[in-house]
Image (tube, rainbow, N blue to C red):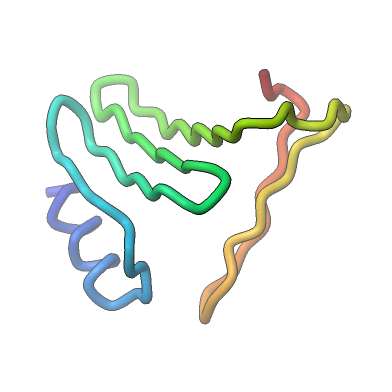
Length: 82
């Protein structure tokens, strides 16, 4: 049911260039010019994970924030990043 809901959300949202795989866990990924993004959802936990990778190191800071742009944009932050 959650996979269907995720599909419906993606079908009405502008997320071109994202790839979706339902196994082994629900995964969205995108390769960018200098970085990559992987979002996973583990229904048994249930927990979402966002993994951001790039060649150069990330600057160290006490808080990490990411902004999602678009019609329903949102910014999320954490002080428990690794």
